[in-house]
Amino acid sequence: MSTEPAEGPRLLVVEDDDALRKVYKRTLLGEGYRVETVPDGGAALGAIEQASFDVILSDLELPTMDGITLLTRVRESDVDVPVIVITGKPSLETAILAMERGAMRYLVKPIERSTLVNVVADALRVHRAATARRQAMEAARTALALKERAEERAAGAEAAQQTIVGTLDAIMECAPAFIIAVDTQGKIQFINKVLESFKKEDVIGSDFLLYLPPGDHDEQKARLRRIVETGISENYETTIVGPEIETTPVARPRRAGTPPRKKRRRRPDRMSSQSIPSGLTRTPRWALPVPAASRSADCAMDLSEQRT
Image (tube, rainbow, N blue to C red; front, side, top):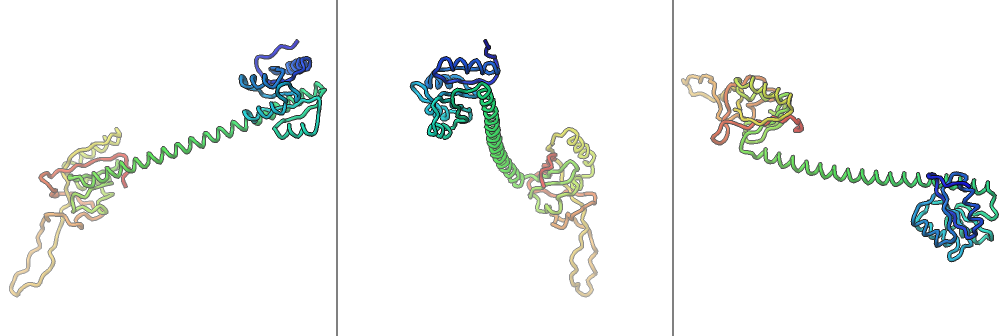
């Protein structure tokens, strides 16, 4: 007598004839399957509620519930499990109904052992393929849902980041102190608009040392190297300076006998927009006046280099 294996495909046999039920079970156990047998449709539904099966074999002529009704109930909860219908009273009507309700095969009694074994093996292959297809579709739906969720989160994070950056830009632009942000190469990436003497298009990209007192250059270079090495930004105060400017007054008509004026160097109270030409290379020598009582400005070194 064959014993039921601990693992392997699980089959449900629904047959009201005790002798046939035992024959089916013995044959399928010999093929290495786990087999559960029940005598009617009600017991079959109870077994299906308690466990999942890879193949169901059901007789059409059953007490309390016929095989077509059982097949219909099975398909309401599981569209993949193969159902093999067996009958001793074949008819065209029941064959059509069985196929319409989702039966895989329609077998007529008596059934040869080889036929039963081959049909069950085919049903198992169909079930494995259907299961793999369903799992692949579920995985694809899950991946798509995760992708959409990630995109939504990324869009929300980007919008929040843009809001924060815009707010910070507005705060820096309107700050009462003069703010400069430089990259790791010491090039100016941002200035706010406290000093009208500085035009952004003239200053952006130039070396920040051009606007610091010569005596501070070594200290600021060391600070920049430290920031680059540690990756930690620093905020500090320093004096903003500009280049010495040679100015020439506009020529005016002279009265007769009036000696010509000598050219003289003067320092303007405020730098004009032409005072800081693009590509400035001269060493600064004098300090610019800044608004308010203080002549110091906040100079923020920004290693992120995100400002353009």
